Amino acid sequence: MGLEKKYKTGILWQDTQHRQLIDLMEKLSDADTREAKSKMFTYTTAFLAMYVTHHFKLEEQYMKAYEYPDLEFHVKEHQKYINLVKQFRRDHSSFSGEGALFLEKNILEWILNHIMENDQKLGVFIRGEERKRILAEEG
Image (tube, rainbow, N blue to C red; front, side, top):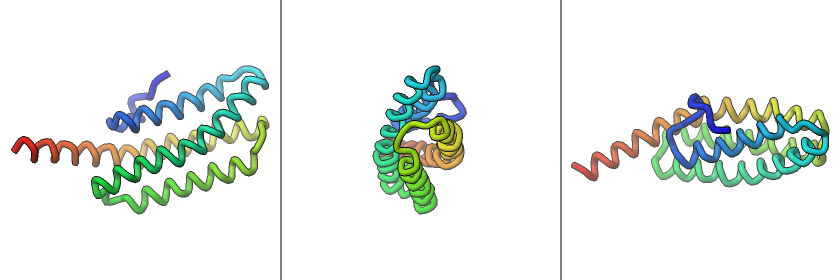
């Protein structure tokens, strides 16, 4: 489907991973039978568990490498989300309409809000630091 422009951070790897997650959530929402929704639910919850580990770790590595001033706050936000996903998986180990709805609404809303606020700021910062490095190399 593609990542809406308002969610793009300008950091290729970050935008690509955000798009993957949002596309997956949309596929879950678009599943039109209980069987299809159940399969997408299982896949989505497993993907989320992997995503919060790998995507957040990568973001945090970049924040450290670029000495991002809001590192501590951003990491705390990640930890809140990791805890939310872990709790969700404990409470919804198998498909239910209620679990799918929570995933589609609450978890997706958190993701989009995080991208719009925290990740946008991080993207601006990283792009600025990259420009400084390029100029320093050229100078």
